[in-house]
Length: 385
Image (tube, rainbow, N blue to C red; front, side):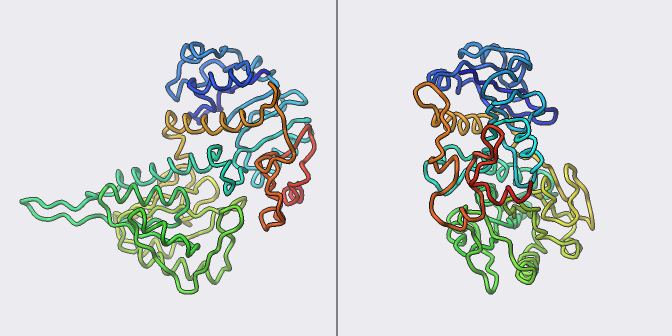
């Protein structure tokens, strides 16, 4: 079996497979072809890959492999019919990728569709591994831009009060952000639409911001459900009031397959104190702050708003290692007798077998289309094509 690892397009510094993963993949029966300089930005040389048993190849040679691994979606026109492409396709926001995969006769596996509640899938969950790093980096960015010290300091010149951080949302990214800010010595407040998150927030050192009428707005996949406009307004008002005197605000609210909800309207930014910093972790899907400039940093009403679109990608060495571990665990799990086997009874591939909301919504695991045909479990996705 030939497995190719592509060099990512300009702007993406991560690589899908790192050298330490090569021996495990070879042991499973793969011949590994790495595009020249694929790992250079993640500090992995061509020689390092070769020392682990991989072959350094041209892009054309890599594209000719039966199985391709990447982070982003490559140009599908360059892929042969029958190719298995394993990447992060974000199919609900990019249905055109699915349509092109179908028309090209490709088998598309999108790793961001991992059913994260399956215990067997946790070691393959690229969302969690990358979000964890993003939450950490968001706090570092906020701390680097705020014009004051973070921890309390008692000095002969006086006492410095600790900075106040507000983390909006407490999924994987939010919890890491809370823990990181707490380790830096900040006082940390955090919110979530899931009432069950209060215990998790407090376990990592945060103080839960409760909103009247809050319930467990969480779907079967572990993502937050869409909320009514009235409740969104109530959450915004409550949390933004707490954030009005904060030094750093980190927004993490993300709804699967939908634009990011606005959690900080312009009217709230006007009331934030001058010198404060907002780090918007969802700039790539529209942003949680109404004033976010995707990909850039702006200052409005004396508030700095950071909208970096790929936070995990700013730490390519660590992010690549984690992504590679996720992908290696996944790929080796679907090898049977030396061949890639797409078992349509595998819950990771096709989604839960029970009649749950998760299944009915059509979020049927990572297998999007097989040999140019949309998998039947992807019912909701089919409606977008």
